[in-house]
Figure 1 (cartoon, rainbow, N blue to C red):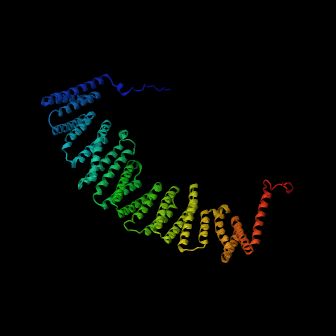
Figure 2: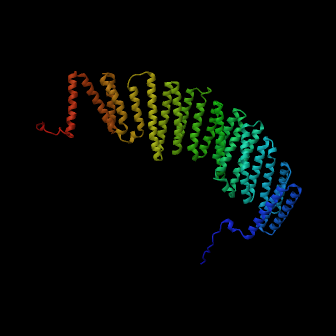
Figure 3: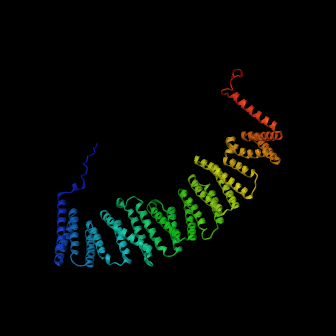
Length: 600
C-alpha cells in the first residue's frame, strides 16, 4: 500500500523568500531611493537624463530576465525602472509638464507590457502613471467636467480589475475606490443641483459607474475585496437610484412621478424575471435602485404637497406588484399587501385635492377590502394572513373617514358590507383549511365579522331613533351565534348556542314581566316555544333548556305580577327558602347539620 507523505507546513510569507530575492529587493530600494534623492537635490535636465538612462537600463534588464524566465528579477527590475522613470518625470517643470510626462510614461509602460506580458509590474505601473497624470491636471479641469474625470478614471480602473491578471486586478480595484467615491459624490451632487444637461450626464455616469462596480462581482479573485455578496449591488443601486431621481426632479412633478414609477417597475420586473446567477447579482441592485427612486420621489411629492400625483403614483405602484404576485407565488406574502396598501394610500391621498370626497374614499376602501378578502381567501396560509391584515387596515381607514364626517347611515352600510365580506372569508377559509393556522384564522374571522355586523345594526338602530331593547339585544345575540361559526353544527351546544340565546331571551323576558307588555310577552312565549321544539328536534341541550327556562320564567313572572303584593312576596320568599334548604341539605355547613335539640 502507498503511504501518504507528510509535508511540512509552509512558513509565513516573509520566510519563504530566498537570498537572491532579498538582494534584489534591497538593491531596488536603494536604487530608487538614490534616484529620488538626486531628483530632489539637483533637478534639471542632467538629473532627468541620468534617471531616465538608469530607468531604461533597468527596463532592458527586466525584459531580458523575462525572456530567461527569471520571475523575481524581471519584476524587481521593472519596479526599479518604474520608480526611476516617475522620479525623472517629476524633475523641474510645472504641473502640466509633469502630467504630460507621466502620461507618456503610462503609454511606455503599456507598450512594455505588450512586449513582456508575463511581467505584472508593467500594467500596474501604467495604471499608476495614468492616475498621477490625471491628478496633476485635475485642478485645471472645469467644475462641469470634474465628475467626468473622476468617473472616467474609475471606469478605467474597473475595466482593468475586470480583465487584468489577478494581482493587477486587485491593485486596480483598490486604487479605483477613491476615484469611484469622488465621482459618485460629485455626480450625485450635480444630478441634484446642476443645470440643464449636466444633471442627465452626471446621472448617466453614476449609473454606469454603479454597473461597473456590480460587474466586478463576476470575478472570483475580487470577492474578498468586494465584501458581502449583496454589498456592492446594493450600494451601486442606491447611488444610481438617487442620481436618477435627482436628475428628474428638475423636470417637474410629472418627471418625479415617472421616476418613482420607474423605480417600482425596475424592482417589480427584476423580481419577476431574473433567475439563476443573474438574480443573485442584479436583483439586489434593482431592488435598491427601485426602492431609493420610489422613496425619494414620494419624499419630493410630499414636500411639494402634490397629493394627486402621489395618488397616481401609488395606483401605478400597485399594478406591477400584482403582476409579481401572480408570477411568483413565493413573493405573494409581500407583494399582495404592498398592492393593497398602495391602493389604500391612493384613495386617502385623493381626498386633499378633492379628487375623492371622504365618503367616496371610504366606499373605495371598503370595495378594496372586499376584493382583497375575496382574492386572499383563495391563497396559501401565509399570503392569506398578510392580505387579510392589509385589508383590515383599509376597513379601519374607511370607518374612521365616515366617523369623522358623522354619516351614521353610511357607516352602518359600510360595516354591513365589511362584515359580510369577513364572514364569507371565514367560511371559505374554514372549508379549505389545510393547517391549524387556517382553522385559527377562520375562528378569528367569524368573531370579527360578527362584531362588524352587530355594530352596523346598532348604528342603524341609533340613527333610526328606535327605543325597543330588541333592536340592540337581538343583533348582539345574532352576533354571538355568528361568532361561534361552524361550532354551531359540531361543538357543544351550551358553548356555541348558549350565549346568543341567553342574550336574546333575558332582556325581552325581563321587560315583558316588569313592564306588563302583553305583545312582547306573547312574542317571547312563541319564540321560546319554537326554540324549545327546535332544540328537542335537533337534540341540542342549550336551546331546549333555554327555551323551557324562558317560558317558565315568563309564566312565573306574569303569575307573580298578577297576584297581590303580600301573596307575591310570600311566593318569592318561599321559593328562596326552598332553594336554600335544598342546597344546604345536599351540602350542609356549620349549623345546618345540627338537630334542633342540640341547638343552644
